[in-house]
Image (cartoon, one colour):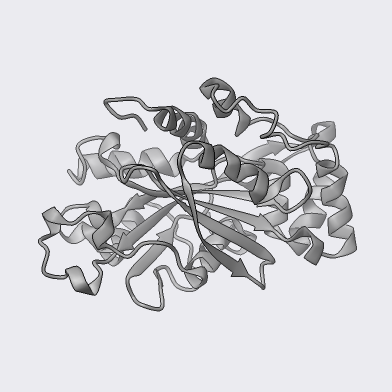
Length: 302
């Protein structure tokens, strides 16, 4: 999504967003309906709360490798998060300027999986002999943009994908989708009138045929009540595996976030509020359920 003055990070975001938008039909459906109902003037009016990526915690990959791209461009690593049941760790990253999205990067603790699952993952990730980001010219925006869609390991077999799916749907998603943009997030609190409430916006989404992730309830609320999140169910995409085998798998999805005003800023008029006045960061309990937007229990509703 572009701005008047294109910065290097804008170029990178465009390189991420264009393929993502082509894969996720809900993006056009939501944006078109928002324009038609005069919630926004155009797509560029949407404030992107955050984008998210999934990685595998193995040598030469994972957060330690992937985060280098965004740290290079001025993002700052913030709080860690842990998801024991899903065997995930994560960090969020604050942007160098307020208009850019936050970034959320998660990582599968591969060593916590069964031996069979570890062996399947390593069959592919062991092909990555050095940290690929170290070999990337981070000043070359075209190369950085292409990196997110580059096949770092060979195409998995459908059998391996299905075996991983039984134990870790997250692992199966990454072994096929790699660094594809997992989701972007519409800042609902920036919308006009009643639509700035996530509960009301969810009603609008369902009225245009968007299927919402119901894991933990359609609205996930942080413990302090100041961060509300919901998400669409991942779009199913046709995937081709090794030996030409094909099947439909979970692709990416859209998230929606409402960040409420911090108590000390309640007296500030809405039109004067900025990011610093609202609840920042993330909530592990919310994110835990948002992950399930790509899980079979949710996607089978599509």
